Length: 264
Image (cartoon, rainbow, N blue to C red):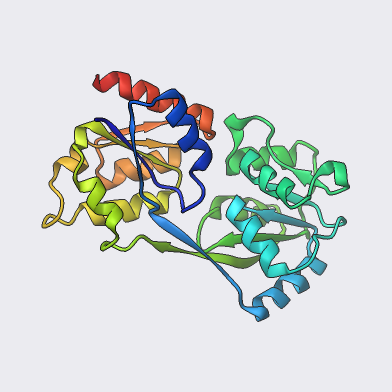
């Protein structure tokens, strides 16, 4: 039976998994959370966050994880006088779950079209109002690494950047039983859905262990990536069957449907 491997952190695959189960019941699903999210719970970092929020002109949450972990670290309500920017709809939904909405008086900006849910799309959205970033204080709430391009755009415009590491990503242990479930599949009938370049790199590190995996896993398995940069990372590493789709579960469904037709 063909299999789709869902690689988001534990708890973040429910919506897509349910959609695939409804639309593609013939497709086996394997949960392989390549990265786990570990929140930063250091009180000193929480104090640093509050201090920087008092200085900032704009706060950018780079992901839904940053919102959940950031609000936990903050330990209080978000101030309505500090504007928020997020990359896309998933983060906007995470804010809404916290009661942080425009209707409640918060200032929130993000690209409205899912075709632009990336760093470039957010940069265009923020600059659509002809805002000058010179001498502005920009606060990034993020995990380790990522979104360097977006930060550089602000620096190039004369802004000052502050960063608080809200969470860490921990790679899935090679001894985890999820890998054994994967090993039982045929690579040419298996596809991964990936939305992180870091996850692609960890997958490559595991599959490039010749004592455990054959070269066919690199040559024949299909990687469906939610952004061009992720696809470029996969191709640069050496994966042969790499496809790209727009961010959003509806686009993931179409891409997986097309892959399934191609192998049937």
